[in-house]
Amino acid sequence: MTARNLTRFWEWGRKIICVGRNYADHAKELKNAIPTEPVLFLKPPSAYLKEGSPIIVPAYSSNLHHEVELGVVIGKSGRGIPRESAMDHVAGYVLCLDMTARDIQEECKSKGLPWTLAKAFNTSCPVSEFIPKDKIPDPGNVTLWLKVNDQMRQNGSTSQMIFSIPYLINYISDIISLEEGDLILTGTPKGVSGVQEHDEITAGIEGIVTMSFTVDRL
Ligand SMILES: CC(=O)CC(=O)C(=O)O
Ligand SMILES: [Mg+2]
Image (cartoon, rainbow, N blue to C red; front, side):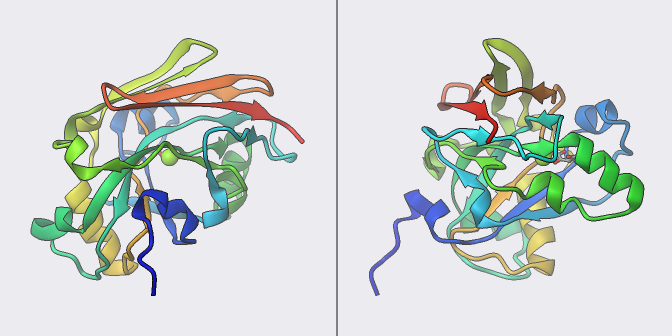
């Protein structure tokens, strides 16, 4: 079998596991309780989007939000991975947007329904180029930022995460086996806000990577 190219992991069709409310300042801005254990949800591989193609606002939403997040790319499969060896399972990182139809999410929350329509639609997971692990020696202390039409909306440090990357890998892999090519979205800092058709979103990990996407409607 030909070896797969991990730098194009988004083509492998693996799962995307998202962590919600992992920054207290974001949980507060949406009036959510600070979690005592990670909040998890999933996106399908069809959510991936690479630079050069637009983010499509779902036809059923009128309040699409950006959430800038650090993504962790799994390089070695495992289940029940101990916290102490969790980083051995990481191949690298990507900058991600967890695009969220906030109006639909609020409706789902009020009805006790899952967030699938709000979080898992096509183009809901724009990602940067793959960043090898050695380019980010301390993923628990990098600055994530996001601008809409050149206006800063989000600017926060991963040092503010409630649950660290090793904690998340241990927690998730006890429930869902992690496979090579899986992606973990680690949650967003405060500043989430709405975007409209024709907006340009630019985001970065300070000193490491930048990416930009336009917003469109079908
Ligand atoms: C309230 C949310 O949408 C949770 C989430 O995705 C986050 O990053 O926090
Ligand atoms: Mg998120």
